[in-house]
Amino acid sequence: MRFKLTTFLLLFLLLVSAIFSASKIYGKDISEKYKEWLQQTSYTVPPQKKDVATSYATHFLNYKGLLSTDYLTNYIESIAEVALILDPIRNINFLHFCISPESISVAYNEPEDQYFCNFKLIVILRKDTEIIYQYTKDFPFYYYPDEADKIIGNGISIQDFFPVIDGDYRLSILVQNSVGKEFSVFEKDISVPKNPGPAKITGPVLGIKLQESPTHLFVPFKVLDTKLLVDPNNTFSSTDKIIVFFSLNNVTKDLWQEGNVEVLVNDFRNKNISNKSFDVDLRNYPYNKTFYVIRSISLQGLRPDHYKLKVHLKDGERKIIDEESTNFIVSSKNIVSHPFILAKSISPYNCHLYYYSLAHQYDKVNELEKAEATYEKAYSLKPEYKAGLAEYACFLRRIKKFNKSLELIESIKEDEKYRFDYFLIRGNIYMEMGNYPEAIDNLLEANKIYNSEVKLLNSLGFCFYKTNQPKKALDTLRASLSLNSQQEDIRKLIREIEKSRD
Image 1: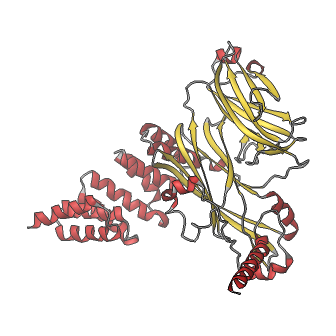
Image 2: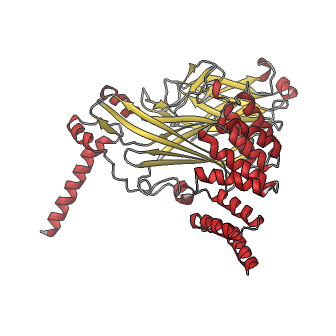
């Protein structure tokens, strides 16, 4: 009897779970019967019983501080695509990407008669173990019930891009959905070629189609005035024409005159037999160090299967000097749906932000001359941008250009929002110059605005110590330790001050 009851309860719970899973986007509609229930609460779908992705399990500590415990058990598989595209006008490399969660949870807003979910995107770029760049963006998404079939059937692709300096890095992309407390992780090693350097292919990237985009707007997967519509699943119908995009960097005049590019499509069963191909003669393009190639390939005649598209760059002797590839699938379906794209455009009036991002990265990899030049470029584009100005002034202080930093930060003196930065930067500069009384005056002003900044307290305590005020120094440094106990250098300084008082 107990066994039958247990079996009955198990079947009942499975049935309830199957019914309620309709609130999760798996290609099923959300029943009208459950709208009233969704109005009262956001339904969190129980996590599927499957192995946690290797990338998440391996690098758990990298995300521990970014995700609340509510999210940690709700990992959702995802698929992503990454493309490096050089902006030919500004000569800046941008890393474009899209990520599509396997499934998402949604909630219903009765007053607006809308379904919604809210994505938080966190992007991290690491050089070895050091984070050299990180940013966060929000992507709220609302849709009406009559759009549900399209959204549910196609899924969602979150797309973005950011500038990146040359080098080898580890890219991490996290997506959190506050509805359902879900998250996805994607990681990839990326290489941004140096300029000048050997000729190299970046890409290829496959697209659904091309779309005209105003030249003055920055959007993901765009070259000049053309945007490539990308589906990270790379799944197409045999009736489709796919768009192939790749670029050639550091092309010499000799390679331009004599070289060519070979593009091959092979299925996984017959890797040495080309199903489709085309060549690109570089002389048919005006000479440039960077070439952008956009071509279409009809998939007609390809049976449903997995395929590899390979790009070979060849010299005048037809030797392969670089090669890249990507995979795609030809589906048995006549029509393949593609995800709804969530992306944001950026106005050219905000392109100073790109240079601040690049300057920050150069600073992190200790290329200080490039960092300073790029900060100056960013500042010159928009001198009134005070957040960047404060960052630039702080950088100048760290490279010991004190007078220029002091001159620069006078522009933020009267802005209430930046008065803390103003006094903190001034205080640290005077401390490093050995003018401890002036440093104390500025640091105390900053401390009046915010009295829980560890670095401020450390600087202030050191200045008290250097001006023979041991009690104030000890009180201040101990306050810093109470905020962050993991400061061995401060403990050492405290012991030194205590010893000097004996």
